Image 1: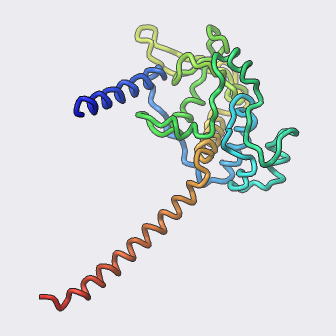
Image 2: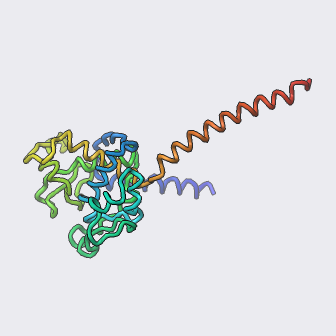
Image 3: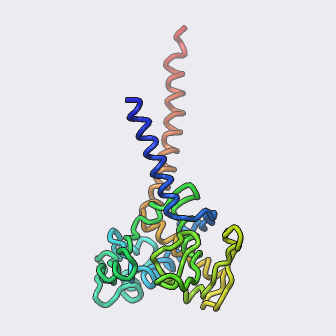
Length: 247
């Protein structure tokens, strides 16, 4: 039994090491801003997600009408976030043909419904990973897509938001090959600060999408803890009253 347990622990360690090696990068993850309670940020993130992500990625467990939970009306969803062929009660389906996607990118783009929950690791939360990843693209003409990523080297995904960020090239140390920073090639439609803020909104939306009820869960948890604290106090007083005459 002991050998089985040790083998299982070793396998977990190897799996974790392989997962880290798959990323191929040791740059630290930037801390994602906390915008889960910022409805305008979540609404802007939903707009960015539909405009820049759903073209290739699906969110098969998220229905458009659930966006009413972040303050959007059904009419706003229909006018601003739905294609003419989509229905308000449908899930967020990718617009790309899976066969074409596999041919172009080498693999079918993954579903993003719970991506923010699945990417947590040694470097931080899943939101931290996504926030860093979406701000780490650079031009690389040697790649089929024309893009590469410092956090995820040789990634098959192109830079979908490059028009917002502009084109950059990565600067590496010629001796150690360590990443040193970026050099802007062409400007984007947003400043660096505005782009980072937009990515923060997008990541917050993906974080919310992974568990839309998390705000309710946290609020309910506070009430439950308060109830248990009060009941503990009364139980303690009742116990003292029962045993006060017992020698």
